[in-house]
Length: 445
Picture 1 (spheres, rainbow, N blue to C red):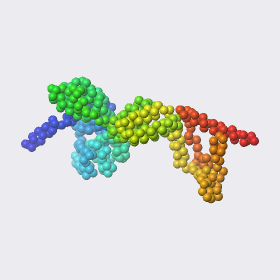
Picture 2 (cartoon, rainbow, N blue to C red; picture 1 turned 90 degrees about the horizontal axis):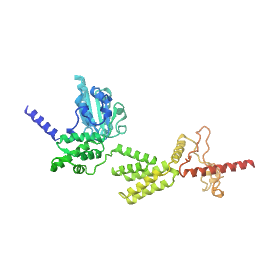
Picture 3 (cartoon, rainbow, N blue to C red; picture 1 turned 90 degrees about the vertical axis):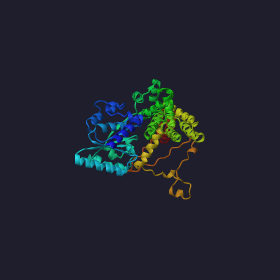
Picture 4 (cartoon, rainbow, N blue to C red; picture 1 turned 60 degrees about the vertical axis):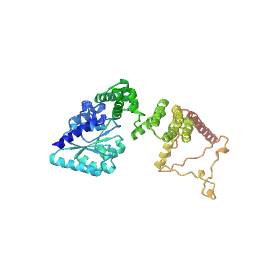
Protein backbone atom coordinates (compact mmCIF):
# COMPACT_ATOMS: atom_id res chain seq x y z
CA UNK A 1 0.00 0.00 0.00
CA UNK A 2 2.83 2.36 0.92
CA UNK A 3 4.69 1.60 -2.30
CA UNK A 4 1.52 2.34 -4.29
CA UNK A 5 1.23 5.73 -2.58
CA UNK A 6 4.86 6.49 -3.31
CA UNK A 7 4.43 5.37 -6.94
CA UNK A 8 1.37 7.58 -7.33
CA UNK A 9 3.21 10.52 -5.80
CA UNK A 10 6.19 9.96 -8.08
CA UNK A 11 3.96 9.78 -11.13
CA UNK A 12 2.20 13.00 -10.11
CA UNK A 13 5.55 14.72 -9.55
CA UNK A 14 6.84 13.59 -12.97
CA UNK A 15 3.61 14.77 -14.58
CA UNK A 16 3.98 18.22 -13.04
CA UNK A 17 7.58 18.44 -14.19
CA UNK A 18 6.90 17.16 -17.71
CA UNK A 19 7.55 19.47 -20.68
CA UNK A 20 4.74 21.88 -21.46
CA UNK A 21 3.93 20.08 -24.72
CA UNK A 22 3.37 16.83 -22.78
CA UNK A 23 1.28 18.53 -20.11
CA UNK A 24 -1.00 20.09 -22.72
CA UNK A 25 -1.45 16.91 -24.72
CA UNK A 26 -5.20 16.48 -25.48
CA UNK A 27 -7.15 13.64 -23.90
CA UNK A 28 -10.15 13.82 -26.25
CA UNK A 29 -10.67 14.60 -29.91
CA UNK A 30 -12.48 17.80 -28.97
CA UNK A 31 -9.29 19.06 -27.33
CA UNK A 32 -7.17 18.44 -30.44
CA UNK A 33 -6.11 21.67 -32.14
CA UNK A 34 -5.69 21.67 -35.91
CA UNK A 35 -6.02 18.76 -38.37
CA UNK A 36 -9.69 19.56 -38.88
CA UNK A 37 -9.80 17.38 -41.98
CA UNK A 38 -9.14 14.41 -39.68
CA UNK A 39 -10.83 15.23 -36.37
CA UNK A 40 -13.84 17.34 -37.35
CA UNK A 41 -17.29 16.01 -36.51
CA UNK A 42 -18.31 13.15 -38.86
CA UNK A 43 -14.85 12.93 -40.43
CA UNK A 44 -13.81 9.34 -41.28
CA UNK A 45 -10.95 9.15 -38.76
CA UNK A 46 -13.00 10.62 -35.94
CA UNK A 47 -15.85 8.21 -36.61
CA UNK A 48 -13.48 5.25 -36.54
CA UNK A 49 -11.85 6.38 -33.27
CA UNK A 50 -15.10 7.20 -31.50
CA UNK A 51 -16.64 3.91 -32.62
CA UNK A 52 -13.50 1.99 -31.58
CA UNK A 53 -13.41 0.53 -35.10
CA UNK A 54 -9.98 1.82 -36.09
CA UNK A 55 -8.07 -0.50 -38.43
CA UNK A 56 -4.33 -0.30 -39.07
CA UNK A 57 -3.27 3.25 -39.95
CA UNK A 58 -0.17 5.27 -40.70
CA UNK A 59 -0.06 8.87 -39.45
CA UNK A 60 2.33 10.78 -41.71
CA UNK A 61 3.33 14.40 -41.22
CA UNK A 62 6.03 16.85 -40.11
CA UNK A 63 7.19 17.00 -36.49
CA UNK A 64 4.82 18.63 -34.02
CA UNK A 65 1.64 18.12 -36.02
CA UNK A 66 -0.12 15.71 -33.64
CA UNK A 67 0.73 12.17 -34.74
CA UNK A 68 1.52 10.94 -31.22
CA UNK A 69 -1.35 13.03 -29.84
CA UNK A 70 -3.87 11.20 -32.01
CA UNK A 71 -2.40 7.86 -30.95
CA UNK A 72 -2.71 8.87 -27.28
CA UNK A 73 -6.34 9.85 -27.81
CA UNK A 74 -6.94 6.41 -29.31
CA UNK A 75 -5.28 4.87 -26.24
CA UNK A 76 -7.68 6.74 -23.96
CA UNK A 77 -10.83 5.91 -25.93
CA UNK A 78 -10.34 2.33 -27.11
CA UNK A 79 -11.55 -0.77 -25.29
CA UNK A 80 -8.68 -2.67 -26.84
CA UNK A 81 -5.34 -3.10 -25.10
CA UNK A 82 -2.84 -0.43 -26.15
CA UNK A 83 0.89 -1.20 -26.53
CA UNK A 84 3.57 1.38 -27.32
CA UNK A 85 6.85 0.80 -29.12
CA UNK A 86 9.51 3.24 -30.29
CA UNK A 87 11.29 2.25 -33.47
CA UNK A 88 14.35 4.05 -32.12
CA UNK A 89 14.88 1.52 -29.32
CA UNK A 90 12.75 -1.53 -30.17
CA UNK A 91 14.13 -4.52 -32.04
CA UNK A 92 12.64 -7.57 -33.75
CA UNK A 93 12.61 -9.35 -30.37
CA UNK A 94 10.45 -6.60 -28.87
CA UNK A 95 8.07 -6.74 -31.80
CA UNK A 96 7.67 -10.51 -31.48
CA UNK A 97 7.04 -10.25 -27.74
CA UNK A 98 4.29 -7.67 -28.30
CA UNK A 99 2.70 -9.87 -30.97
CA UNK A 100 2.90 -12.92 -28.68
CA UNK A 101 1.17 -11.05 -25.86
CA UNK A 102 -1.48 -9.78 -28.27
CA UNK A 103 -2.12 -13.29 -29.53
CA UNK A 104 -2.50 -14.66 -25.99
CA UNK A 105 -4.78 -11.77 -25.04
CA UNK A 106 -6.98 -12.38 -28.06
CA UNK A 107 -7.12 -16.14 -27.46
CA UNK A 108 -7.80 -16.03 -23.72
CA UNK A 109 -9.96 -12.96 -23.33
CA UNK A 110 -11.11 -12.13 -26.87
CA UNK A 111 -9.58 -8.68 -26.45
CA UNK A 112 -7.82 -7.02 -29.36
CA UNK A 113 -4.56 -5.07 -29.20
CA UNK A 114 -3.53 -1.79 -30.79
CA UNK A 115 0.21 -1.39 -31.22
CA UNK A 116 1.51 2.15 -31.62
CA UNK A 117 4.97 2.43 -33.19
CA UNK A 118 6.48 5.90 -33.17
CA UNK A 119 9.09 6.73 -35.84
CA UNK A 120 8.10 3.57 -37.72
CA UNK A 121 10.24 4.62 -40.68
CA UNK A 122 13.26 3.73 -38.54
CA UNK A 123 12.22 0.09 -38.53
CA UNK A 124 14.30 -2.07 -40.86
CA UNK A 125 12.75 -4.20 -43.58
CA UNK A 126 12.98 -7.30 -41.38
CA UNK A 127 11.30 -5.52 -38.47
CA UNK A 128 8.46 -4.35 -40.70
CA UNK A 129 8.16 -7.84 -42.16
CA UNK A 130 7.76 -9.22 -38.62
CA UNK A 131 4.62 -7.10 -38.23
CA UNK A 132 2.99 -8.09 -41.49
CA UNK A 133 1.43 -11.51 -40.65
CA UNK A 134 -0.12 -10.20 -37.42
CA UNK A 135 -1.50 -7.09 -39.10
CA UNK A 136 -2.89 -9.18 -41.94
CA UNK A 137 -4.51 -11.73 -39.61
CA UNK A 138 -5.90 -9.07 -37.27
CA UNK A 139 -3.95 -10.19 -34.20
CA UNK A 140 -2.86 -6.57 -33.84
CA UNK A 141 -4.07 -3.24 -35.14
CA UNK A 142 -1.09 -1.11 -36.10
CA UNK A 143 -0.80 2.64 -35.62
CA UNK A 144 2.43 3.88 -37.15
CA UNK A 145 3.71 7.46 -36.92
CA UNK A 146 6.31 8.78 -39.32
CA UNK A 147 7.78 12.06 -40.48
CA UNK A 148 9.05 10.44 -43.68
CA UNK A 149 7.14 9.66 -46.85
CA UNK A 150 5.64 6.20 -46.24
CA UNK A 151 5.79 5.43 -49.95
CA UNK A 152 9.57 5.49 -49.59
CA UNK A 153 10.05 4.20 -46.04
CA UNK A 154 7.26 1.68 -45.34
CA UNK A 155 7.23 -1.75 -46.99
CA UNK A 156 4.60 -1.89 -49.74
CA UNK A 157 2.76 -4.94 -48.26
CA UNK A 158 2.51 -3.28 -44.84
CA UNK A 159 1.51 0.06 -46.34
CA UNK A 160 -1.19 -1.55 -48.49
CA UNK A 161 -2.78 -3.05 -45.37
CA UNK A 162 -2.91 0.31 -43.60
CA UNK A 163 -4.91 3.47 -44.16
CA UNK A 164 -2.70 6.51 -44.68
CA UNK A 165 -3.64 9.78 -42.95
CA UNK A 166 -1.60 12.86 -43.82
CA UNK A 167 -1.16 15.50 -41.09
CA UNK A 168 -0.38 19.05 -42.18
CA UNK A 169 1.62 21.76 -40.38
CA UNK A 170 -0.64 23.64 -38.01
CA UNK A 171 -2.13 26.98 -39.04
CA UNK A 172 -0.85 30.08 -37.27
CA UNK A 173 -4.26 30.48 -35.62
CA UNK A 174 -4.07 26.90 -34.32
CA UNK A 175 -0.62 27.44 -32.85
CA UNK A 176 -1.81 30.70 -31.28
CA UNK A 177 -4.62 28.80 -29.56
CA UNK A 178 -2.13 26.29 -28.17
CA UNK A 179 0.14 29.09 -26.95
CA UNK A 180 -2.75 30.71 -25.12
CA UNK A 181 -3.41 27.40 -23.37
CA UNK A 182 0.28 27.25 -22.53
CA UNK A 183 0.23 30.73 -20.99
CA UNK A 184 -2.57 29.62 -18.68
CA UNK A 185 -0.80 26.37 -17.80
CA UNK A 186 2.40 28.25 -16.95
CA UNK A 187 0.49 30.87 -14.90
CA UNK A 188 2.00 33.79 -16.80
CA UNK A 189 0.77 36.67 -18.92
CA UNK A 190 2.05 37.51 -22.38
CA UNK A 191 1.98 40.29 -24.95
CA UNK A 192 -0.13 39.51 -28.01
CA UNK A 193 2.81 40.57 -30.19
CA UNK A 194 5.01 37.97 -28.49
CA UNK A 195 2.51 35.17 -29.02
CA UNK A 196 1.84 36.23 -32.63
CA UNK A 197 5.55 36.21 -33.40
CA UNK A 198 6.05 32.81 -31.82
CA UNK A 199 3.05 31.34 -33.68
CA UNK A 200 4.36 32.65 -36.99
CA UNK A 201 7.96 31.53 -36.55
CA UNK A 202 7.46 27.93 -35.45
CA UNK A 203 6.63 26.65 -38.94
CA UNK A 204 3.41 24.92 -37.88
CA UNK A 205 5.27 22.80 -35.31
CA UNK A 206 3.23 22.77 -32.09
CA UNK A 207 5.96 21.09 -30.06
CA UNK A 208 8.56 23.66 -31.09
CA UNK A 209 6.17 26.50 -30.27
CA UNK A 210 5.33 25.17 -26.81
CA UNK A 211 8.97 24.39 -26.03
CA UNK A 212 9.97 27.92 -27.00
CA UNK A 213 7.10 29.33 -24.90
CA UNK A 214 8.30 27.30 -21.92
CA UNK A 215 11.79 28.81 -22.29
CA UNK A 216 10.32 32.30 -22.70
CA UNK A 217 8.29 31.78 -19.50
CA UNK A 218 11.43 30.77 -17.64
CA UNK A 219 13.20 33.89 -18.90
CA UNK A 220 10.27 36.08 -17.80
CA UNK A 221 10.92 35.35 -14.09
CA UNK A 222 12.88 38.57 -13.87
CA UNK A 223 9.92 40.49 -15.27
CA UNK A 224 7.05 39.41 -13.01
CA UNK A 225 6.19 36.39 -15.17
CA UNK A 226 5.13 38.47 -18.16
CA UNK A 227 6.35 37.19 -21.56
CA UNK A 228 7.42 39.87 -24.03
CA UNK A 229 8.76 39.83 -27.58
CA UNK A 230 12.27 40.06 -26.14
CA UNK A 231 11.75 36.79 -24.26
CA UNK A 232 10.34 35.08 -27.35
CA UNK A 233 13.27 36.22 -29.52
CA UNK A 234 15.70 34.92 -26.93
CA UNK A 235 13.85 31.60 -26.67
CA UNK A 236 13.75 31.09 -30.41
CA UNK A 237 17.32 32.17 -31.08
CA UNK A 238 17.97 31.40 -34.72
CA UNK A 239 14.87 29.41 -35.53
CA UNK A 240 15.83 26.23 -37.31
CA UNK A 241 13.65 25.58 -40.31
CA UNK A 242 11.97 22.21 -40.50
CA UNK A 243 13.77 20.42 -43.30
CA UNK A 244 13.50 16.65 -43.40
CA UNK A 245 14.07 14.51 -46.45
CA UNK A 246 10.52 14.98 -47.71
CA UNK A 247 10.83 18.73 -47.24
CA UNK A 248 14.04 18.68 -49.28
CA UNK A 249 12.39 17.00 -52.27
CA UNK A 250 9.27 19.15 -52.01
CA UNK A 251 11.24 22.40 -51.84
CA UNK A 252 13.50 21.39 -54.73
CA UNK A 253 10.39 20.53 -56.75
CA UNK A 254 8.88 23.97 -56.00
CA UNK A 255 12.21 25.60 -56.87
CA UNK A 256 12.49 23.95 -60.29
CA UNK A 257 8.82 24.41 -61.14
CA UNK A 258 8.96 28.11 -60.23
CA UNK A 259 11.91 28.74 -62.54
CA UNK A 260 10.33 26.63 -65.28
CA UNK A 261 7.19 28.70 -64.80
CA UNK A 262 9.19 31.93 -65.39
CA UNK A 263 8.63 33.29 -61.86
CA UNK A 264 11.91 34.78 -60.59
CA UNK A 265 10.35 35.91 -57.29
CA UNK A 266 9.32 32.38 -56.33
CA UNK A 267 12.63 31.04 -57.64
CA UNK A 268 14.54 33.34 -55.27
CA UNK A 269 12.22 32.48 -52.39
CA UNK A 270 12.81 28.73 -52.70
CA UNK A 271 16.52 29.32 -53.23
CA UNK A 272 16.55 31.24 -49.93
CA UNK A 273 14.58 28.43 -48.27
CA UNK A 274 17.17 25.86 -49.33
CA UNK A 275 20.14 27.99 -48.35
CA UNK A 276 18.67 28.88 -44.95
CA UNK A 277 17.94 25.21 -44.33
CA UNK A 278 21.54 24.26 -45.00
CA UNK A 279 20.96 22.43 -48.29
CA UNK A 280 24.07 21.57 -50.29
CA UNK A 281 24.72 24.56 -52.57
CA UNK A 282 26.49 22.31 -55.06
CA UNK A 283 23.29 20.30 -55.40
CA UNK A 284 21.40 23.52 -56.13
CA UNK A 285 23.97 24.48 -58.75
CA UNK A 286 23.72 21.08 -60.43
CA UNK A 287 19.95 21.41 -60.61
CA UNK A 288 20.31 24.79 -62.32
CA UNK A 289 22.73 23.35 -64.88
CA UNK A 290 20.27 20.56 -65.67
CA UNK A 291 17.34 22.98 -65.88
CA UNK A 292 19.24 25.22 -68.31
CA UNK A 293 19.19 22.45 -70.92
CA UNK A 294 16.00 20.65 -69.96
CA UNK A 295 13.65 23.63 -69.73
CA UNK A 296 15.38 26.36 -71.76
CA UNK A 297 17.71 24.64 -74.19
CA UNK A 298 18.16 26.35 -77.53
CA UNK A 299 15.50 28.97 -76.76
CA UNK A 300 18.40 30.74 -75.01
CA UNK A 301 21.73 28.88 -75.37
CA UNK A 302 23.36 31.34 -72.95
CA UNK A 303 21.26 29.87 -70.12
CA UNK A 304 23.63 26.91 -69.90
CA UNK A 305 26.62 29.26 -69.90
CA UNK A 306 25.13 31.24 -67.01
CA UNK A 307 24.26 28.11 -65.01
CA UNK A 308 27.70 26.57 -65.48
CA UNK A 309 29.31 29.91 -64.58
CA UNK A 310 27.30 30.02 -61.34
CA UNK A 311 28.36 26.46 -60.49
CA UNK A 312 32.00 27.36 -61.20
CA UNK A 313 31.74 30.54 -59.14
CA UNK A 314 30.39 28.50 -56.24
CA UNK A 315 33.48 26.27 -56.34
CA UNK A 316 35.82 29.28 -56.46
CA UNK A 317 34.07 31.62 -54.02
CA UNK A 318 31.99 29.42 -51.72
CA UNK A 319 29.14 30.52 -49.49
CA UNK A 320 27.88 32.93 -48.37
CA UNK A 321 29.16 35.08 -51.25
CA UNK A 322 28.21 32.55 -53.92
CA UNK A 323 24.54 33.04 -53.00
CA UNK A 324 24.78 36.07 -55.30
CA UNK A 325 25.96 33.94 -58.21
CA UNK A 326 23.20 31.40 -57.62
CA UNK A 327 20.60 34.17 -57.33
CA UNK A 328 21.79 35.73 -60.60
CA UNK A 329 21.49 32.37 -62.33
CA UNK A 330 17.99 31.84 -60.90
CA UNK A 331 16.79 35.22 -62.18
CA UNK A 332 18.36 34.67 -65.61
CA UNK A 333 16.92 31.18 -66.02
CA UNK A 334 13.48 32.20 -64.73
CA UNK A 335 13.22 35.12 -67.16
CA UNK A 336 14.70 33.26 -70.15
CA UNK A 337 12.40 31.96 -72.90
CA UNK A 338 11.49 28.33 -72.26
CA UNK A 339 11.67 25.27 -74.47
CA UNK A 340 11.98 21.59 -73.66
CA UNK A 341 12.55 20.58 -77.30
CA UNK A 342 16.20 19.64 -76.73
CA UNK A 343 15.16 17.38 -73.84
CA UNK A 344 12.34 15.85 -75.88
CA UNK A 345 14.79 15.30 -78.71
CA UNK A 346 17.28 13.21 -76.73
CA UNK A 347 14.50 11.37 -74.86
CA UNK A 348 12.84 10.44 -78.18
CA UNK A 349 16.13 9.34 -79.75
CA UNK A 350 16.94 7.13 -76.76
CA UNK A 351 13.44 5.70 -76.89
CA UNK A 352 14.07 4.70 -80.51
CA UNK A 353 17.29 2.95 -79.51
CA UNK A 354 15.46 1.15 -76.71
CA UNK A 355 12.73 0.09 -79.18
CA UNK A 356 15.39 -1.74 -81.14
CA UNK A 357 15.64 0.35 -84.30
CA UNK A 358 18.58 -0.33 -86.59
CA UNK A 359 21.55 1.58 -85.21
CA UNK A 360 24.23 0.40 -87.62
CA UNK A 361 26.37 3.24 -88.92
CA UNK A 362 26.03 3.70 -92.73
CA UNK A 363 29.22 2.64 -94.52
CA UNK A 364 30.05 6.10 -95.91
CA UNK A 365 29.93 7.60 -92.38
CA UNK A 366 32.25 5.04 -90.85
CA UNK A 367 35.87 5.75 -90.00
CA UNK A 368 37.89 5.55 -93.20
CA UNK A 369 41.26 6.67 -91.89
CA UNK A 370 42.80 3.31 -91.07
CA UNK A 371 44.58 1.09 -93.54
CA UNK A 372 42.24 -1.27 -95.30
CA UNK A 373 39.09 0.70 -94.46
CA UNK A 374 38.22 1.21 -98.11
CA UNK A 375 38.26 -2.53 -98.71
CA UNK A 376 35.18 -2.68 -96.50
CA UNK A 377 33.64 0.40 -98.09
CA UNK A 378 34.14 2.44 -94.92
CA UNK A 379 34.16 6.15 -95.69
CA UNK A 380 33.58 5.54 -99.40
CA UNK A 381 31.11 8.03 -100.87
CA UNK A 382 31.25 10.47 -97.97
CA UNK A 383 30.82 14.08 -99.16
CA UNK A 384 32.71 16.74 -97.21
CA UNK A 385 30.21 19.57 -96.39
CA UNK A 386 32.89 22.29 -96.33
CA UNK A 387 33.61 21.67 -100.02
CA UNK A 388 30.12 22.89 -100.83
CA UNK A 389 29.73 26.70 -100.90
CA UNK A 390 26.54 26.41 -98.85
CA UNK A 391 28.37 24.61 -96.03
CA UNK A 392 26.10 21.56 -96.13
CA UNK A 393 25.28 18.69 -98.46
CA UNK A 394 22.48 16.20 -98.78
CA UNK A 395 23.55 12.74 -97.82
CA UNK A 396 22.29 9.94 -95.59
CA UNK A 397 23.20 10.52 -91.96
CA UNK A 398 20.67 8.24 -90.23
CA UNK A 399 20.72 4.43 -90.38
CA UNK A 400 18.31 2.79 -92.80
CA UNK A 401 15.31 1.10 -91.27
CA UNK A 402 15.56 -2.64 -91.81
CA UNK A 403 12.54 -4.71 -92.87
CA UNK A 404 10.80 -6.14 -89.83
CA UNK A 405 12.49 -3.79 -87.37
CA UNK A 406 10.91 -0.68 -85.82
CA UNK A 407 10.92 2.42 -88.02
CA UNK A 408 13.29 5.22 -87.13
CA UNK A 409 11.34 8.39 -86.47
CA UNK A 410 14.24 10.76 -87.01
CA UNK A 411 12.32 13.98 -86.25
CA UNK A 412 13.70 14.24 -82.73
CA UNK A 413 14.41 17.95 -82.49
CA UNK A 414 11.49 20.18 -83.42
CA UNK A 415 12.31 23.79 -82.46
CA UNK A 416 9.63 25.82 -80.76
CA UNK A 417 8.69 29.39 -81.57
CA UNK A 418 10.30 30.69 -78.35
CA UNK A 419 13.39 32.83 -78.15
CA UNK A 420 16.36 31.81 -80.27
CA UNK A 421 14.59 28.67 -81.48
CA UNK A 422 12.62 30.80 -83.93
CA UNK A 423 15.87 31.54 -85.75
CA UNK A 424 16.98 27.92 -85.47
CA UNK A 425 13.70 26.79 -87.01
CA UNK A 426 14.27 29.20 -89.91
CA UNK A 427 17.79 27.84 -90.47
CA UNK A 428 16.55 24.26 -90.47
CA UNK A 429 13.73 25.15 -92.86
CA UNK A 430 16.15 26.97 -95.18
CA UNK A 431 18.45 23.93 -95.32
CA UNK A 432 15.48 21.65 -96.06
CA UNK A 433 14.13 24.03 -98.73
CA UNK A 434 17.56 24.29 -100.33
CA UNK A 435 17.94 20.53 -100.50
CA UNK A 436 14.47 20.12 -101.98
CA UNK A 437 15.22 22.78 -104.61
CA UNK A 438 18.45 21.01 -105.49
CA UNK A 439 16.68 17.67 -105.84
CA UNK A 440 14.03 19.25 -108.05
CA UNK A 441 16.70 20.81 -110.26
CA UNK A 442 18.35 17.38 -110.65
CA UNK A 443 15.06 15.80 -111.67
CA UNK A 444 14.35 18.55 -114.19
CA UNK A 445 17.67 17.84 -115.90
